Length: 430
Ligand SMILES: [Zn+2]
Image (tube, rainbow, N blue to C red; front, side, top):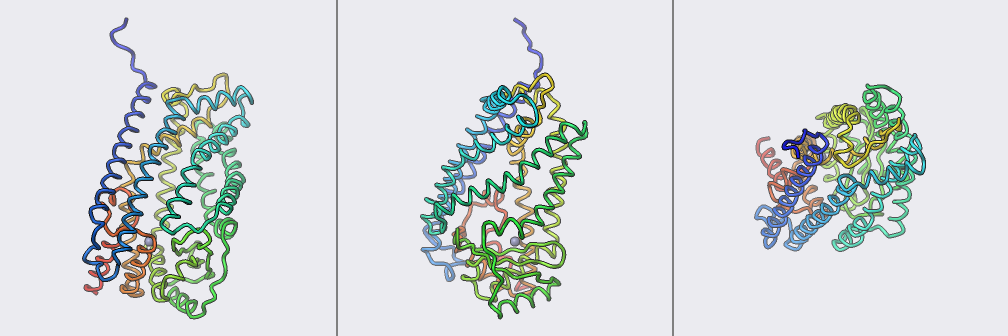
């Protein structure tokens, strides 16, 4: 017996990964239990500031919806952890790879098969929970408008679109990994960014219409209002559309697409049904505020920078044997490429690490929301934006009393209470 084992990077990775995973699970469970407790404690009464605008029934519905979602989140966490362990340390990915290797030999076809096999198996595992969320939870709170037939059609369509777009991209990345030399990751990153920008541009005109109908806005007075608002803010409307969001869900929204000063505006029909014209204006002004403050460009630039970092890291990790063995995958020998394995392992492991920077990105996002609100108050009216937000929070059953720590970690939008308080303060200052 030797009294000191040599340092093994593979074992260090296994242990490090398992420890980090355990820490993230404990933190997530702690956050969810805080949220559940906090919301339950405030369930009996409407907060004083909203006593005149929100009914007790609406307040309690929001509390119940929030608590239910937090509980489902815990179920998702357990399932997700089991699946992640199954793929990595318990040897699932290795098993998939070895079986396909025995069947297809090592080459591009086998690598694509590994990716497709992984996506199919993961997708199948997710189906029961997704069905439960749509047809039990959303149904119970009156949000679900989709039918099983529509749901199946959506799944089929998105799988087809995913295959048509995803397979060539996967093949391109694998090809670059295999042929572009040690700096392949720089090429792969450039290709990936180019494709992302292209998809961003073609999404509204080619992909979104596969799932929803877009009709030009017919309400003349609203059209005049919105056009005037956009002119005032220095934008040109490239088209005003109404989308049949009510086909699937009662949740309401509005968004802009397009690059440069010409914007395509899309309203969910559910939004137009719930808000008065002045409130619609205020919501649009908020969205325009995101453009005025360059939030969209900043978000895209951040994504570019982080994916460059990711690709560089993957470039290095993919050449390290311990990266595979530490996650229970035996790398292919005798020249068969390991690129698909490296891609998948990286995608599986990275969210465990990035979980800890989530509060940072959530904080930036909440700051952006405040800035967009301030812009909307300048361009329209604080009163209209307040009442619109209140209606939207109520319609989405967003709780007015979330746990402050949970908010810090996860909320991309500040709670209604904070947004309304800021607007009120701004109104006083103006
Ligand atoms: Zn916003």
